[in-house]
Length: 355
Image 1 (cartoon, rainbow, N blue to C red):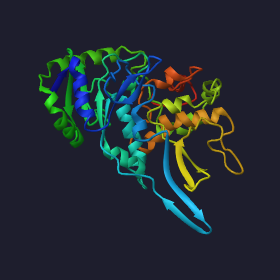
Image 2 (cartoon, rainbow, N blue to C red; image 1 turned 120 degrees about the vertical axis):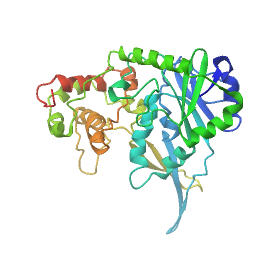
Image 3 (tube, helix red, strand yellow; image 1 turned 60 degrees about the vertical axis):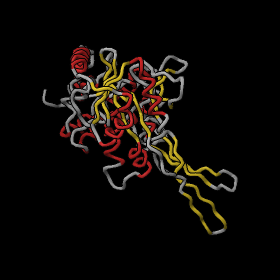
């Protein structure tokens, strides 16, 4: 294990950031944190979470996919992608790192592979940072994610694991990309004893156990009860306040739905095809030429939570597509969130389950 004192972390960022793009959480003008490219003077935020997760680096909010021009009946297409340079994202929390695995299962591990997403994943090195002060809205432990980075479940450790303990940042490489990072950074790092990290892990685990949503009951979310949950009376109640604003999907580290639009530039550049994030909470998300199968916010809300808690885990060996980051709890303007849905399912009497 390697380390650097906290007061010298800027020198490590400079060493890395002058060799390749480096992104880290930085306070914005509202006091919250966003990922920002390192440059001299940029300081690492002490906030637990960024407003949006690091998903943006691999699945950006908007993306230019292809351009094409038409001259008579002749169509010329141009792929705007260029070879990406390697980059590093520092300070990714364990829950957000598992979010990459959730998206990987769809965009990398199924056919066809999303080559746009793959290109970014191949070039990005993820450095996770253990959560010294978990928030009351965090519930990653419900899904077996270890905020202390003591154990690795579904990619929570990233390419490199990092801990802040005893006034030092400790680093441990987990992958080939992680080893390459350490090779670049080793001149700024020193060999370190892991005792302080062990103490920090225990402290984080103790704090996590005391969180109000640390162990939500997921026992009813089983394939055999899918139709019972789908037809349950709970959806009328849990969806009645929903505004359909889509905030929850835009801050979520695992939402991956998108729309594709064509824009005529009106110039010799022709037409640009753009991929952009979309939300199943929008009333036109499933609008087709003749019909919209989800007429009300009840159907749209149900789809979102059923996908997170039922459809996705049924298709991916029990892996939930919620990672318990708590962003939807913090961001929803009407305080509607997945924790309330989980509790409502457990409390209702019209669904089976083991209990």
